Amino acid sequence: MLIYDGRYQNADAVILENEQIRTVLLPRFGGKIVSLYHKANRFELLFQNPKPQFTPAFIGASFAAYEACGFDDVFPSVEAEVVSVGRERITYPDHGELWSHEMKTNIKADGVSLSMQSTLLPYRFMKTVTLFGDALQIRYQFTHTGDVAFPYVFFPHCLVAARKGMQLSIPAGQKKYLIKTADMEKWYLIHPLKTGNCGYVFPNEKISAFFQFSYHQLPYLGFWRTAGGFRGDHNCALEPASAYYDSVTIAAQNNRESILKPKETLDIPFSITMKATD
Image (tube, rainbow, N blue to C red; front, side, top):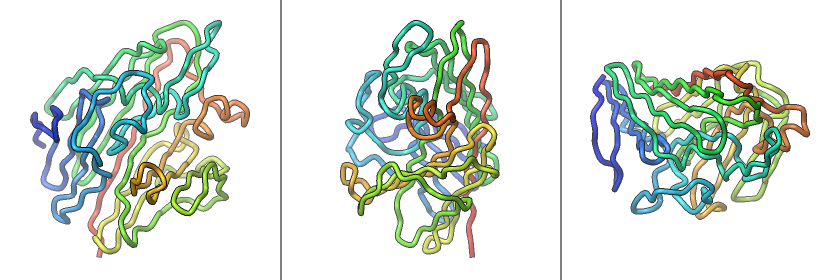
C-alpha cells in the first residue's frame, strides 16, 4: 500500500492506494473521505462535490450550506438540537461537529490516523483508515474524557452517487419513514439488526459495494435518498446507526438511545468492500 500527500480540488489531501482501490481523505475538512475508487472497473463509489471547491466550516454551521458529499462521520447527533448533559444545556450541531473540525494527521506504514479533541463535549475522537485488498477499513474511537455521561447518535455518513439500475441489499424489515416524497426519502428499519452487512449492487457497472460492521454497536439501519429534492443533488446513503432516528431526543423517547459514559472508549470497526461482479 502507498500513502502520500496530494491535492483534491483546492484542498490538501492524504491518498491511500493499493493494486485494487484508491481512497482520498481531507484532514482539514473533518477527515472527509472524498473518493473511493475501484481501479479495474474504473468506478467511483462516492458522490462528488457539486461545488467547485471546499470551504472550511465553523462548528454549528448548516451542513447543507457546505459540501454535502463524500463520506463524513456523524457525531453526536444528526439533527441540530439542545440536549441536557448533566446540569448544562448543550447545542448539538447540524450533522454533529466532526465534519467541521480540522483533524490532526498521523501517517504510518499501515494506515492513517485522524484525531481531534472536542470543544463541545468531553471526548477525544480518532479514526484510523487503511486498505486491505479490495476493502477500505476504518476503526473509530471515541474516548470520554470527563465526568458526566452524554447521549449521542453516531453513524458513518457515506453518500453514494446515484446510478441507473443500482440496487440495495438490506435485511428484511418494516420501515419507519421520516421523509417520503417523490424525490426524497429517509427511513429506518424499525427493529434492531441481526446482521452487520448491507450494501449496493451496480449491475450496469458490474460491481458491488458492501458495508461490514458490528450490529451490536450499530444496531439501527437508516437510509437516505435524494433525487433532486435536496439542493438538486442525486445521491443516497445506507446509515448503520447507534441509536434509533436522527436525534438523541427522539431516540430517548423510543428507548433506543446510546450513551457515552465517563472514561468509556467506543471502539467501532467499519469497512467497505468493493468487488467486481459478473
